[in-house]
Length: 254
Ligand code: PGA
Image (tube, rainbow, N blue to C red; front, side):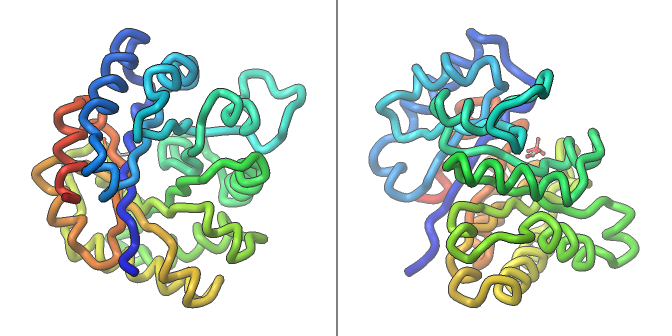
């Protein structure tokens, strides 16, 4: 069985409420039943727009995701959002370990691992991001970095739990820069991730795990990336803020 394709839009800290509603509406309208059979689709708006966007997406083939969560169910954690709250708000997905949090906010593999476990406990499907910095790639450390992030991030997970995890390979130098990884670079990294998953969780888990590519995905480069054997989808930032561009990326799966 070929693996399903899964494409998610990460809206980051963009959109007004009205823009978020309209964007969700256009995406939901564009994902017809034919497209929905070919590709799993999620959008991840900022926290305050989750409920209104959930309302817009209701009954559509587009799922809702959040961009981060805390690991605890509840507690004295000012400013944090519990994964259980996300579930109640209608989320099926949560992004964990995005480079803008790893590198921008200093979140460690250990901390991300706690979040991953917390999100799974709450019944969320996790999009777990990994990826090397440009300096690490240039020093030929890409595989070492990915291996460390996978070992640390996925620690303590069972193969069964891994079924609720999608890995997003996002080379940091490609995020928001317009500098996309070549198809060969992406495939090479994805194949390495899959081999590492096989070592950690067995070949069955490795065959089934979805690995998204992220970093400057656009309608023009999506098809080439998505036809690589180990690229099972994309995590789209900038281009997901434009409904037409996002739908064009989705349609490359047809
Ligand atoms: P980008 O962002 O598509 O704007 O490069 C990708 C991401 O951060 O997930």
